[in-house]
Length: 88
Image (cartoon, rainbow, N blue to C red; front, side, top):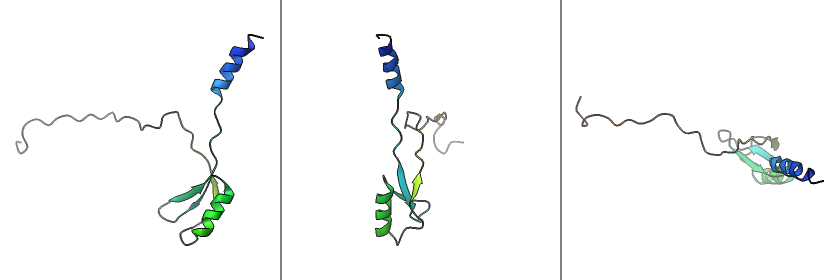
């Protein structure tokens, strides 16, 4: 029985919640979207925004996250310029 506990702990630690479902419609402003958590809420939002909506509510696939939300660091380094401005 005691050997089951470590295995269970490992499996629970690896479990990740399912990504949240989103329902969105296009606003017609360069790909901008309005989104809600449910289809019903999206349709309700669409009804009150008919003048800007350019499409129906569609389910959007959540993006997979790699664990870090920070952008990758740039490998470019700035080097100080030699001399005074105007000296060539």
